[in-house]
Length: 81
Image 1 (cartoon, rainbow, N blue to C red):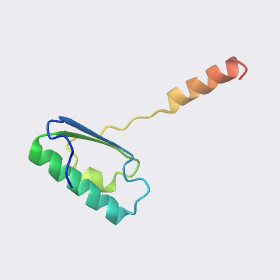
Image 2 (image 1 turned 120 degrees about the vertical axis):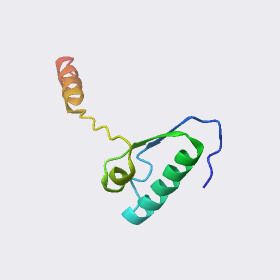
Image 3 (image 1 turned 60 degrees about the vertical axis):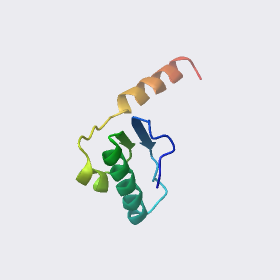
């Protein structure tokens, strides 16, 4: 696996493996993690399944969007839409 631009300092994978089984997901993530570590690139992975990522991650940030979603629904209701 190669990354097209070697000068890229940040790689963001947003649900990149959500349709794959856990074995394929692990293989893809392992390759990206290896590439980012060898090249000094920062890798941000957005995922719901954290089982494999948690074993190799330097940091994990969990975001709860429920308050934002509720605010969106309240505004939607208030506007009568």
